[in-house]
Image 1: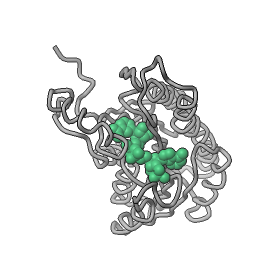
Image 2 (image 1 turned 30 degrees about the vertical axis):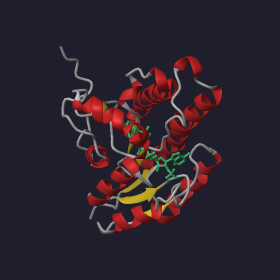
Image 3 (image 1 turned 120 degrees about the vertical axis):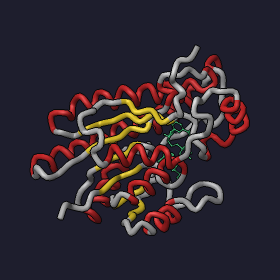
Length: 263
Ligand SMILES: NC(=O)c1ccc[n+]([C@@H]2O[C@H](COP(=O)([O-])OP(=O)(O)OC[C@H]3O[C@@H](n4cnc5c(N)ncnc54)[C@H](OP(=O)(O)O)[C@@H]3O)[C@@H](O)[C@H]2O)c1
């Protein structure tokens, strides 16, 4: 029997991360789900609700709360996963934030810039570094062991939104981080992918829901609908199961065709 595979998903309490955890669980992965705390802000149930949902697929779910931008918590978080499952086969860097207030690039504040770069980029970079070192050791110990790393960036890695420059810049940085880790880890057979969602229906896009409803209606998205966390989760599940095994460094867009240049 092949070994139980384990995925560590950051930002798993809601939105896209929740969708990823659920889809991976359906494919038989055990999930370690991170979020900044056990309960999400406001009245959202958070990781405990996702645990219940994942367990409906008869998969295991270990909540590993912790602010991912605090690099000190990374080692503890990884240890918790290893204590429970012994291994990590898949890392999904999904946790992310939008600016608290959208502001024109001419008015972007250093505080918002630092917050976005810290949560969206710095945290994923250093968590990946730590998990990758562990994956390399596992690879060296067992030829059976397979591993991959997935960065959830955004179409904003390339699109320009002058009202949230710090977000776009954090995602462009993440895109390059994915590429460089893919290059570095290829010799160990650890594939790294960048997955770029388009407009996905989550808490993050709720404040601009009307604007995106209008843009989608006007044809911004060729597939003419919002994306769902499940759309992204299914793509992650395909990568995690090895369906794109000869494609390390690939950028996979889940955006309903938003990047197609049209005349
Ligand atoms: N929605 C979109 O249209 C869209 C498009 C492209 C890319 N993305 C990217 O997809 C990812 C998920 O976005 P989403 O739309 O699902 O957002 P969301 O609904 O706001 O969920 C964000 C998740 O990240 C977690 N998180 C935020 N800061 C964290 C921190 N410091 N430490 C640990 N966890 C933290 C949140 O945990 P708590 O519950 O504890 O706050 C939550 O689980 C982000 O990287 C985002 O940039 C989203």
